[in-house]
Length: 113
Image (tube, rainbow, N blue to C red; front, side):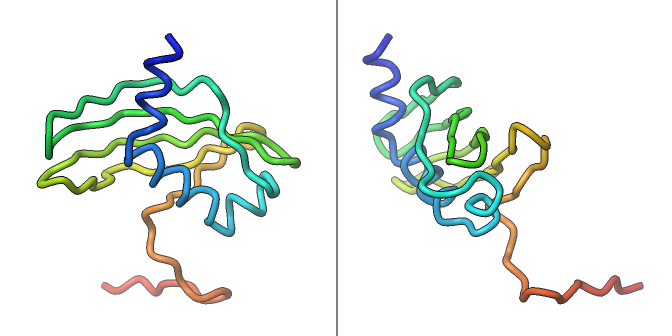
């Protein structure tokens, strides 16, 4: 069983997802720093040369709380592309989309007709 977790944790999809979550200011604010990965990753990952797919749930925690990184990604021509990359904060169930473009603080997007 540890071998399977090791394979998931050594994948670029896992590493990229964790790095993005750890670096995201909203995740840092909600669970605190340092952010650590949990031991038991769930989901699946399939890699065949330059292609593959990943569907993972990665537990994370900080001094102020816990959360889960949800990952859905596809690998094509050796590159991973995320279709879903969100962190759900355990306590509030708030979801932080790590793929959203960051906007400047205190500015809202206007709706256009």
